[in-house]
Amino acid sequence: MRDPVNTVYVSPKGGPAVRMPEGFLITRKVSSGQTGGAYSLFEAAVGPQGGSQPHIQHREDECFYVLEGQFEFVIEDSKVEASSGSLIYTSKGTLHAFKNVGRSTGWLLVSQTPGGVYEAFVEEVGRPANEKAESTVPEEWSEAERLAAIAAEYGLEMVLPVP
Image 1 (tube, helix red, strand yellow):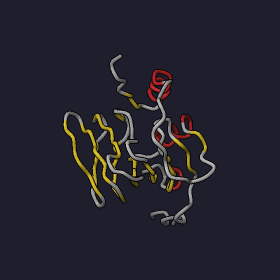
Image 2 (tube, helix red, strand yellow):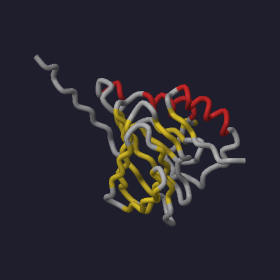
Image 3 (cartoon, one colour):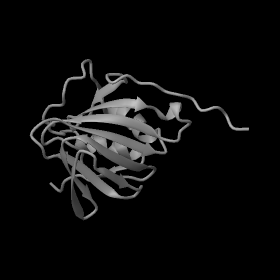
Image 4 (cartoon, one colour):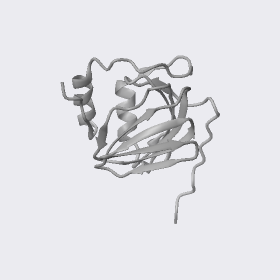
């Protein structure tokens, strides 16, 4: 017999939030612990010109749904323009990155399947966000090599810029 499905409710402003080294605010909406490890779901507020460094997730697939704004995704050797309502799916082992190319804060839903790996990485490198203010322009990622080493522990390969 199947276990009953658990229900999770998170209010619009609910969920623990952290500011990532790249500058964007990420709020966990559903943890892998709440889904039996199946997936995790985050909401990301990304300021103009903010985004993620190019990276490869070796242990999980990742899906992005654009709630609001204009984004440019790099997927392997291609660029994809994505606006509200767009969905981008990347399977594990795929090089990808995103950037808010709009003039205001953009919003994404980001899920990982299975869950747990990325959320542990976020908890280790993110700084607690006391207020859920909109994201600012990304900070200089001065400790890129240290963060790449931490990422590797979670099966994330950060593709660092060539000096």
